[in-house]
Amino acid sequence: MIRLQWLDYLATLRERKTWLCGAMLLYAVLSIPVMLARPPAHVQEAIAAWFGHGGPFVLFMYVWIDLAMNKMVAFLPVVLASGIVLRERDVGVLSILAAKPLSMPRYFALRAVSACAVMATLHVGAQLLGLVYFTARVPGFRPLAFLAAMTPHLFAAIFATCFSAAIAGWVKHRGASALIGLAVLGLLLGLSLIGFYQPAWRNLTLVNPMSLGALALGNLDHLGPKDLAPPMLALSLLSLAAIAIGAAGVRRMEA
Amino acid sequence: MTTTHAIEVEGLTKRFGEVTAVDGVTFAVESGEVFGFMGHNGAGKTTTLRMLLGLTPLTSGTARVLGREVGRETIEIRRTAGYLPAHYTLPPDMTPRQFLHYVGAMFGLPRDVVAARTEALLRRFDLVHAADRALRGFSTGMTQKVGLAQALLNEPRVLLLDEPTSGLDPLGRHELLELLRELARDKGVTVVFSSHILSDVEALCRRVAVLHRARLVAFGDVDHLKAQHGARTMDDLYLALVRKEAA
Ligand SMILES: Nc1ncnc2c1ncn2[C@@H]1O[C@H](COP(=O)(O)OP(=O)(O)O)[C@@H](O)[C@H]1O
Ligand SMILES: [Mg+2]
Image (cartoon, rainbow over all chains, first blue to last red; front, side, top):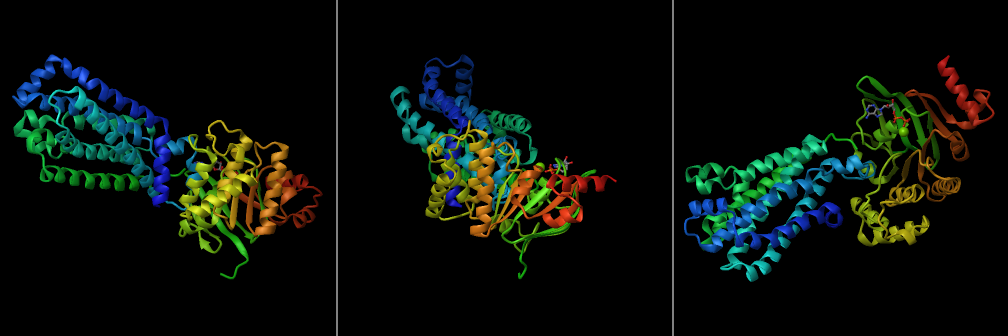
């Protein structure tokens, strides 16, 4: 099973859509310092209002998470996972693979885990590239706080991938699955930072899994394991639940 | 199990809503034979094979593959079966070698076993020169070779082939029939050869089942059936069966 998962991951890495996602992330990394040099006025105002005198690093992290990585997390998981199993069925690969000794739910889980692993590879790759590039280009950049803050965000990206896969498992139509995934993830991400400027809603936003990935924004000065671990654990459990739910959806699917 | 039957099918029925695709079909396939599974387009051949592999649930009736109950022991059946569907696509971004390794991993076979079988199959099907080229853009003949190779990777005891000669040129067709004879003779593999091409079945199979509009219209030894219906050739036999059904 581990061997199969590894081969499936490699196969997923080689797919064209993975390269498309990689290119988008590369663009995000390269464009942020440029954008940050002259932030749009509305962003500056908003940040001043929400974070007060957070300094340039807080401004940078806000821009990186809200304008770059959250947009990516609304989009890339849909590209990677909204068609899992459905694409194999539509293309005709499933006619062969479905006759192998792997039930449809197991095959779904295999593909979903590979999509997550590719999402994780791309996410980590983007943060590491960012680490090098931002250290050179962003005044006041703090590498350790950056990595700490982006770790829960990685788990949010993985959850978003599982979530998109789960939609595929129940909707069973590629176009509809992608549209629903984009709409729901877009909405969740759009609302994910609301707790920062409406402190009264802070607790309410915690039911939004996407907020868990950005909680660290509120606490960049002293991020420790006890800030980071709970959202990561919660997102991991939600990810597993999403895969299980998606797998249940394909139980009766035929090639 | 003491049966010498590799496959036993009894009263097998499949309905898709209003359409009855397979209607109370009963037949048995002996171990190690190349069995002809005949019928016009839409007769119910594909649906029957898909039920045997647990790819679609059966509506009623029972079936056993190597003594294992269809619908209950699906995973065990698939472990010992090879299947080549009539219509399929190979993963366009993989190479033949990668794909065979992937299929081997799906069976949970040890890595060195998969590697050895892959190389043997690539040689057997004359695919070594193309083994590391992406499958996208493979010709029909080459695709069919990779399709057969993946069906043989687990060294199946039962091989279910759905119209495997369609789309092959005469040489490819000849080689395939030769391969199937060899598998049955030398390895004792039971082959179910589904086809609407009468000459292929005649060249390959001693025993057949004939489906017509979802129903079994004949089953048994070809020579017997010919004598019984006063037919000299397979064409005569098939026409006699179908006309009798229409009457
Ligand atoms: N998934 C399906 N839904 C509805 N009808 C189907 C489905 N699959 C097959 N059929 C119908 O069942 C009948 C038998 O089809 P099939 O088994 O493919 O025949 P064959 O393989 O002998 O050409 C046909 O009438 C076909 O239209
Ligand atoms: Mg068919």
